[in-house]
Length: 463
Image (cartoon, rainbow, N blue to C red; front, side, top):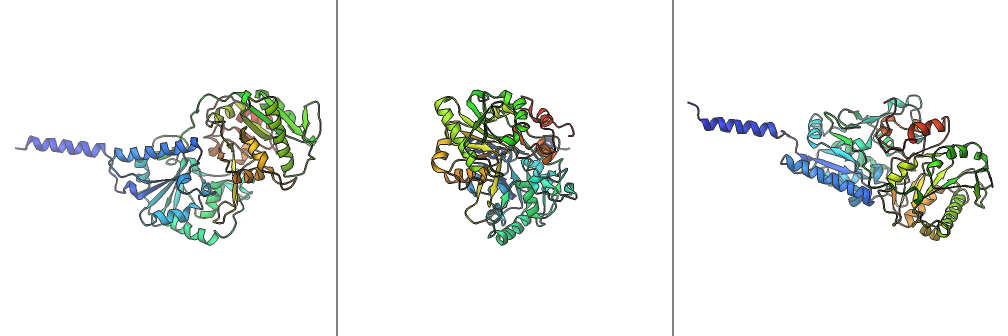
């Protein structure tokens, strides 16, 4: 006769094995690398992600993965490009880890699904996997690479996360040591440039590395939640840089679209135009660069604020072919204090991937540069253009780097047109700006991408 106790033990064992996932690869064989920024908003997001990873590991009684918060542990000026991280990660973890998962602060990770995926691959092979993006047409932000067939080249959507084997980390570390003595010129799109650097095809797994959560997803980007009440439009001053050449075509686009949602906007030009009207900056226009002109604009804005509108907390520097969603900008700015020194926009880098000192990041002018009003006097006191036609956005970035003024990157700002970006990259955003009227109808672009006052993720009709 069977013992009733045996039945109890059998039921108990069944309960254990049906409620606890069976994982042969240990979680501490994985390293999670959070590509974090150091401002308070993003630092908090990174810490929340770290805590979530620890809690997931505890729920299945495992030691958690090593979580590396990049802005704290490796504050390299080009860490956001990933490439300078390879020697550091190789030194710390190549001997004790099998896989590396790279995430942004807003990336959500399912550790059980992650382990299930990587168990099917060999960490001793140089491989990487993620959500592959492709260009529908050759684009300036990728230097028109693969112009004959741009869709054949895949690069990872950073916000969905991507995985690299230890073997690949070791290989990329060796490659870095060979190239680190050379300058790296411009860093524009870290994802595309990383794929060029790795030079191994990305294993494209969009059903695992998702753009929104669903069955089988091991990671996806969490949509940003409003930080608080949108900042009042009366606290933002928009300074639009223009010239006589564009008074009749570009300026009317601004005035008929986003200018109508502003409380304070001023058009700065080298020539007077009463119809707009423009404010004369006293600096002749140049074909490129515009550094002296831009600094003259900043000086005039600072004077205007001090004398007439002390309620201004934020200054937006925009081109006359920049398209902006003012309500979304108001919401975005609620994530940072206006009392400290800070600038927000789309980040580019100059000579930031190499090991040599001297590179710096800057915010691209075309997408709009947002600077707290309290930052402006510090800039004007300590920086002056080296030449009238020096690149204004780059010089501002160099100035802020020397003054240790934090630059915050937001993917909501865009230096180029919507068709210059992969559709799935834009699909997870609430865009704040786009730039350039070249070969597009700017009114149609504004209407489709920016005219809505809500802050929901844009759903393009082709997706």
